[in-house]
Length: 377
Image 1: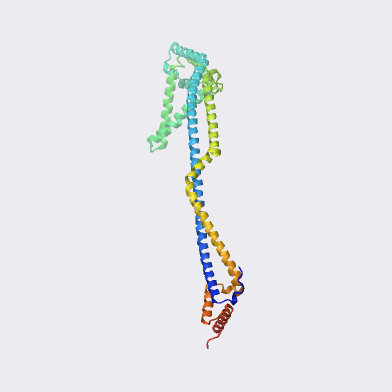
Image 2 (image 1 turned 90 degrees about the vertical axis):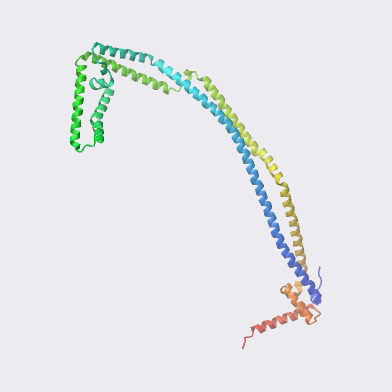
């Protein structure tokens, strides 16, 4: 509302202006406090919302873990059953493999038994001591085939390298050369004596029996190779149909199907939790905190309303001051301090119009400024 020219009014108008300026300052301080309170309430609402969301996430995650763990335990039990069945299957298969090996090598083993008896017979007929009926003797004195040659090389390496080195390490003699000369001499002498005794007691005594026994033992080694070959072939055979293990396989397939079904149920349960149950859980958590949220929301709305009211008052007073006072007396005088000075000037000088007070006020200010600018003598 426009009051007209306030410059023609008296001191009472300035007092009214001062009261309005004081009221405006109070409203501004109140607005500042309201803004702080509103921000605090808004932050409290945000923190509470974050707390609720965290609680919802924790509850959903816990339920998810419980569901997953429940199904995983079921799968674990099924896998334990499969493991037991496979162990039984492997045990049964192992027995069947042994039976198959035994069956397919029966003729070769019988042949070896007969050949062994023939060798024993040759030794008895030739009156040769049974102590010579061994692999080492025939490899050293009647070798046949690469395996005997390799055994001869190993024996020579043991006698002429490993044995002297071991003895030297154990005895640590002072004279190394003398030690090796004596050691090799004793080894050669001992080996020569043993070789002569064995040769004299066997080949020299009955060469035909030794020759026949060599051929028989060679045939036994060939049979052993065939037996080992058959064992490898049967062991590597992946075809289990001949072992009649279908009952185990069917039971394993049934359990594996059950595991797939449990896994499918687990996925569906987790999907339901994510899409539906999580909303129910969220509603339960929110309901638990609803009273506190409503209280904070109510306080926030009240505070917003108070802030809005104060803003309206500030806008109304500011508009009134701008339209009715500032346009006439100037912006520099629109403060409580300046208005108090104007009131004091008008009262002291008994002035009737505000315009007179303003003129005197400004003259005093100019004089004061002039005085302060004069240099001291």
